[in-house]
Picture 1 (cartoon, rainbow, N blue to C red):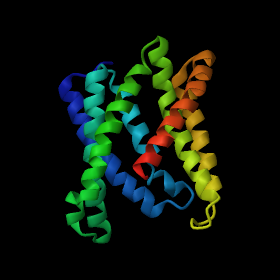
Picture 2 (cartoon, rainbow, N blue to C red):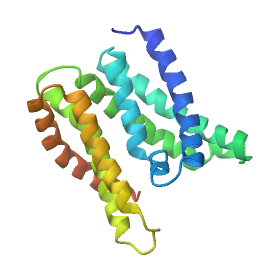
Picture 3 (cartoon, helix red, strand yellow):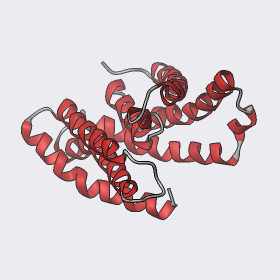
Picture 4 (cartoon, rainbow, N blue to C red):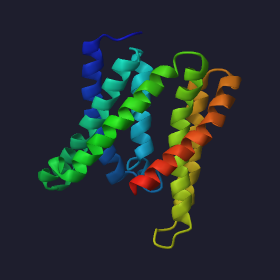
Length: 204
């Protein structure tokens, strides 16, 4: 069912508030290795994808709404930290927070459109379906690098397995036919490589 612009806007704001607050709660109380899913760029990107996929409101509204969702999630996360563990509320408008909001705009546009494309047909559907897998596979690659780095605590292998499994699961759930799933998984690998290089350039 397609949503009008007011419903898209309201869903984006409420979704952002929930994403940010629940993300902090998840990190604080869920044990490792699953706690890392809260502190995960892939999780937030897939939330934007899910928004675009579910609202079925066209690529423009999906992009704008998903961007709003991720931007709102950032102050929601820090305000929840303030309420639950007494963090300084000034962090909400700190340069780091503003930078994450800027990243949220970019990720929201890309993954919001991807979610919309996943509901269409042809090449767009394959690329859209590939995006959640790609972002999880990219994160798995970064965890694999940490597993070999003595500066990081042990256990990153579990995070690699979790991210790979979630990437495959996302394609299975969204892909539809076996052929589309196979094509999406194949497309996810080069897309993941592009994202990996992007993070490396950004120093993430």
